[in-house]
Image (cartoon, rainbow, N blue to C red; front, top):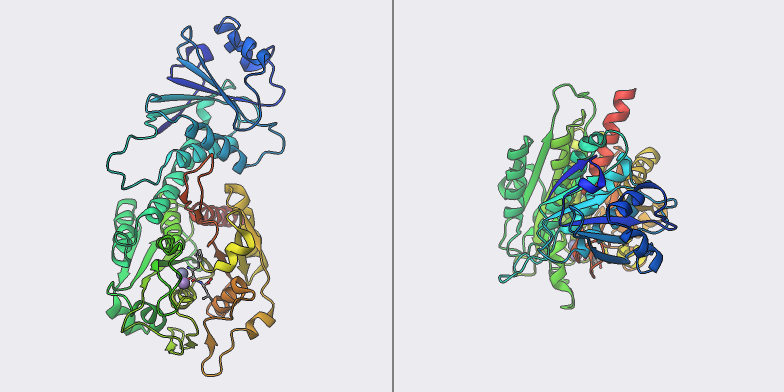
Amino acid sequence: MQIVASGNPLAQIEADVFIIPLFKDAATATGLLAHLDEATDGQVASVLASGEADSRSGHSLMLHTPSLNTKRLLFYGAGDGVAASALDWQRLAGAAIRQLDSPLFKTVAFLLPPPLDNAAAVKALVEGALMGDMEGNLYHTAKEPARQIETLTLVSQSANAERFESVINEATVMAEAANFARHLGFEPGNEITPTTLAEQAQVMAEREGLLCEIFGEDEMKQLGMGALLAVSRGSEEPARFIILKHEPAEADASELIALVGKGITFDSGGISIKPAQAMEEMKYDMGGGAAVIGAMQIIARLKPNVRVMGLIAAAENLPSGRAYKPGDVVRSLSGKTIEVINTDAEGRVVLSDALTYAVNQGATQIVDAATLTGACVVALGDVRAALYGSDEKLIADLQQAGDECGERLWAMPLDSEYGGMIKSDIADVRNSGGRVAGSITAAMFLKSFAGNVPWAHLDIAGTAWFEDEKPYLAKGATGFGARLMAHFVLNQAKAARQK
Ligand code: BES
Ligand code: MN
Ligand code: ZN
């Protein structure tokens, strides 16, 4: 879907369908609707007067308009427009696009009445439209596409609508990367293995101009990544450690942001095997890694002037005669020993080595994203991701980035008492603190591997996957975290410039 801006008069807009967001108390007498009403000989006023089209969100009415260059008008309920956020506009556009469930609509126009007539709203609408358009049915062989929209024209009547071009570009970059991350999440575990995840990252890096390095198991052994290797032992699929680097020549060499992702391409639980119920969903246990790959694609394209390193610890967690077992003690890259209580708490184990690697590389800020705990799903559902961190400014910056892009976070506590729950009798730390405060003790475990570097952790177990379809998004992988981490990095670069 190609997205363009147009400032042409409404009656000249050509499209198979022209979406008209209807806000509460929309009147035809004034503003944009008056123009359309004129061009349709009063049809718009009569539809509004009939009460059949209204502003309740999700309500819609299609009107055939042979007298216009746009063959149809789709009145789309947009709510009251009061105190709306980026997320509201993403949802508005996503739902309006998903409403067009026919390949008939090749060209779509979308009217931007106030309060949509500004750069921030346009950015959100573009992201929502592109993400809403994507479906997860990758392997339907006889598929009739739900939609085949070729162009989406955003129609603004305010002076020089072309000014939206750069924001359309930025939003397209954001949405394409989020959809790439979603694609990786939708792919089944037999397609996306640690090896193919690394290949996908490498292809992206070469295309976009990032440096990419992939460690195989030999390199991991040499380095001493005993934690990542332990989780991977039960699988025939070899582990991969993926390194992506954005290194602008002019960037401050003393700053390095590390984005770290959990890349478990399938999590069966291992010897502490999961129940069969919904185990198939554990193909998205690489959602954190996919988000990092997506964020790095955005960073490659938008080129913030700051050094960024993306690190993904990729492995498959399976039971076998070689698998790591409860009671095993493994030695991590940091030198710290980990007692394995539960092989299903594998995410924190693989991340421990990735965090140490980031610290050793000189990271000055670390943000990790992981589908880490079922406890996080219980606490926050699919609405907000849990945010943990060791640094107030980093926490605040991530919250701000989340609000800007509609990926909302909720700050959680890390009191030292929680650390007591992961003390081990035999080793430095144990990988499970039991059911109580499960998302917090997992974060506490990660914290101990970040050293003194400002660090934050996003538990995206609930937000990375939608169990059901939403009006604005297909069910399944959401790409949560890709746009958020990229926004965070872009904001850091902007702040540095202003210093
Ligand atoms: N990948 C899971 C967490 C998860 C659960 C993500 C549901 C998305 C939806 C993780 O590896 C896991 O199994 N965590 C365990 C930890 C426990 C054994 C301490 C959990 O949350 O049950
Ligand atoms: Mn697990
Ligand atoms: Zn897992």
